[in-house]
Length: 320
Image 1 (cartoon, rainbow, N blue to C red):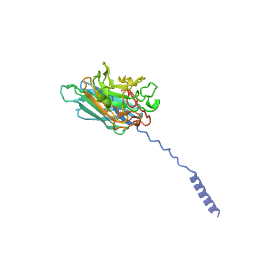
Image 2: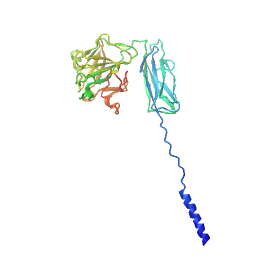
Image 3: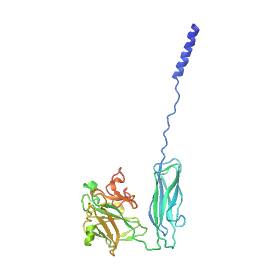
Image 4: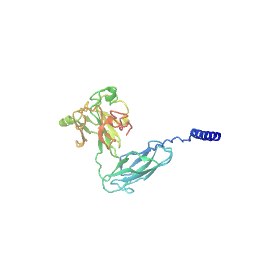
């Protein structure tokens, strides 16, 4: 009986000590955050005469290893004939971005403008952030170039408060003075806008321009001219050319209007019908992305920074 008692005591002790043992469990390592890669270009329109555009690839956060981005080129322009550029960009470890230059090649053939479509073909040690693409137009300089003037942003219904409606920055919200039209030179050559006329629908019927652009107004490539209805425009406006309507207002109607621009010879060079847009947006309509995109209400572009307008600058506030 004594031996049996000792036997069970030993078993009890073995079970007790085994129950007290714990396995060393390594804490779960946090999963590494893989940065996303975005693509952009500095100029969307370049001259055939050795025009350039900088292609930039950028990471959302720093990588501990080199990131290799391979680019794919398509469009109506021919790679290594109409233009040249690298097909691979390396973002070094610890860096956020890197660039390469695209160079147009001059020829003497009248073959019209050509487009280059740039896509991210593959990424090593990172991921493409959504679908990244950019388009560049090579302007043929062997034929007369048309006037490449576009309206990039329009404010026809300023917001009701100074914070939401004082687009010209003079500290006063005014329904007429804070209206503006932003014109962009979407070409590789300066445009002489001397004597150009701007009309709303009513002014066009009476042939009485709301604004006549002063002599000597030269709009440089990829730059903008902002025309306010009036007031005292105050600020840098991205270093854009800034003017006030020579008639005292632009008279843009919330319920629908048509903007018409004529050159100094009275030829219509541009029209924009704002009637399909919201009647009372209390903010500007801007192209998104700038220059190439469709018009959307400005505050919808970046809900985290709901800006109501950006005269003279891109929608994110940076200069052209």
